[in-house]
Every structure is written in structure tokens, then in C-alpha cells.
Image (tube, rainbow, N blue to C red; front, side, top):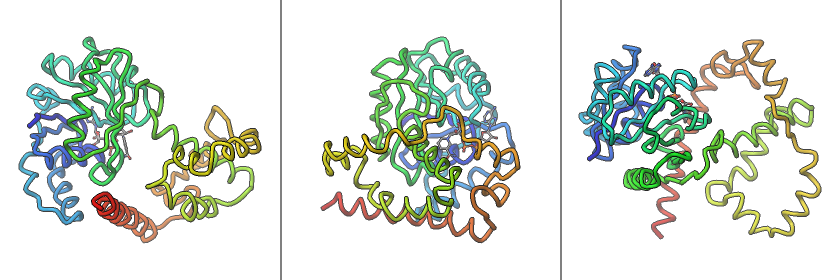
Length: 305
Ligand SMILES: NC(=O)c1ccc[n+]([C@@H]2O[C@H](COP(=O)([O-])OP(=O)(O)OC[C@H]3O[C@@H](n4cnc5c(N)ncnc54)[C@H](O)[C@@H]3O)[C@@H](O)[C@H]2O)c1
């Protein structure tokens, strides 16, 4: 059993608390928003119910009265506060002041290099990234990001802890922005937005293409396996033809910037690349959850054979 402190009781924080508690660990959660903390148990129970699981593990999740209260007893701290560098740096300064010297410090930042997040930490050997994916109780991957200062044994311990939780931990050996998963994902999103921006197809078509073609295979056939499957010679021929015309902008697309400037923020405002309403949003959220549950069951079944 490991004593875990989770910093931030939002979307990711509540899911992380659930996963650690399900794994038999004691979890203390802190959040400056009283409603986020007050609703924590209710949200965890609702998530467990949606997964068809009992809520026995909820008794291992505690609302801490302060960050210091959560951290002082922890052997592992996982920060899941908003994606703002200065906030995360200030939080880790406070966390280190309150935590024991042996406590492992982990950030769940989506894309910010861990070296920057941990800039104000004095003892950096025990600091690393653990990038979970949403929802953390249904998506297996956790990227474990090692900085130039992270002690290798800390990476090994974290990988083991995550594997024991039933996750699929991967070792990211260089602390690059976006790590591995979000670099791959946003290379695709950059091209997707560019195709729409340049009138090659509309937003609906981009999603139809992905969902009805390589998206179908991705859960069992990674891009590198696929390159080998079709042949590295064919991959080279294709790259010789197409790479020069792919989007390679180093700034966000003007099309995306205009959407944001016009307040077209997607689900938040019911208008983004596409038009949304409550029914469409609920339907899509439900579809994603049901798909993730079904694909987990299917892959477990396949792996058992
Ligand atoms: N949402 C995702 O899909 C996803 C996936 C992977 C990683 N992440 C990363 O995880 C982190 C959290 O994301 P989220 O989606 O859970 O955000 P969220 O907005 O749902 O939750 C953030 C929580 O942090 C709390 N908070 C604000 N200031 C704080 C402070 N000073 N101390 C402690 N808590 C504080 C907020 O009250 C909120 O409850 C971000 O770094 C994000 O990039 C998000």
C-alpha cells in the first residue's frame, strides 16, 4: 500500500484517486475549490456505478484540509492541477516544502516539459512526469517521463507501481514537449485542421475518414507495426510522394486561432469546428465511454486466448 496525494480534484484528479484507491492505496486529495472537494466522493461513486463496479474503494479516498495536509503523509504526489506552468511550478515548491525527502513527485501535465514544471524543486532526482489519459480508469496508457535529473530507480519504481495497478506504463526517456502520445496525436490534429482550412474537405469528412479507416485498426495495429506490415519500401515510396505537401507549420493554424477568438470553443459554447447541442454532446460522450469499455473487454478476451 502506498500513501498517495492527488493535487486537484477535477476531471483527472477524481479519476486518478479512483484508480489508486481501486489498487488498494490510500489517497488524499486536495483542491482549493470547496465544491470540487465536496463532490469528490459523489463523482467517484457515480463513475464506479457507470463502470458496474462496487464502491468499496471510496473509503480509501480522503478529502485533505490543505495541500500540506495531503502531502505531509504521502509517499507519492501526483499533481493534476490546471495546465498552467507558473501554477504548477508554485505548487511543486509548496509540495516539496511539505513532503518527506523520499516522496516521489509526479506531474500529470499534458504537454509541458517536466523539467520546466519541476524548475523550483530542489531535489529533482525524485521528480518525474506521469501522463495519464482521460478517463484514467478506462485508458490503460501512462507515459512515465524521465528528465535529465530523474534518478532511474524512481522511474523503475513508478513503472512497477503503475503496472501493478493494471496500467500500461511506457518509459519516455527524453523530456520533450507533448512526450510521445500528444506529439503523435497533435501531428494528426495539425494536418486535420489544415485540410479543413485549405478546403480539401469539411470537418465532418475528416472525422469520417479517420473513424472509418485507420482509426479502426489503431487499437491493435500501431503505426510502426503498420509500416512493417505494408513494407518499409512502400512506406518510403509514400513518404517520397506525400511528405513535402503535409502541413508543417510551427504555429497554431489561423483557422483554429479565429475559432477561439470568435468564442467558438466547441462543446463549451455548442459551436467549434462543428455545431453541437446537449443531446449530441451527451450522445458522443456516452458513445466514447461505451466504446472504451467494450474495447477493453474485447482486448482482454483476445489476450486471454
Ligand atoms: N482532461 C484531460 O483529458 C487530461 C488528460 C491528461 C492530462 N491532463 C492534465 O491533467 C491536469 C488536470 O486536468 P483536468 O482535465 O483534470 O483539469 P480540471 O480543470 O478538470 O481540474 C483541475 C482541478 O485543479 C484544481 N485546482 C486549481 N488550482 C489548484 C491549486 N492551486 N491546487 C490544487 N488544485 C487546484 C481545480 O479547482 C480543478 O478542480 C492538467 O495538467 C491537464 O493538462 C488532462
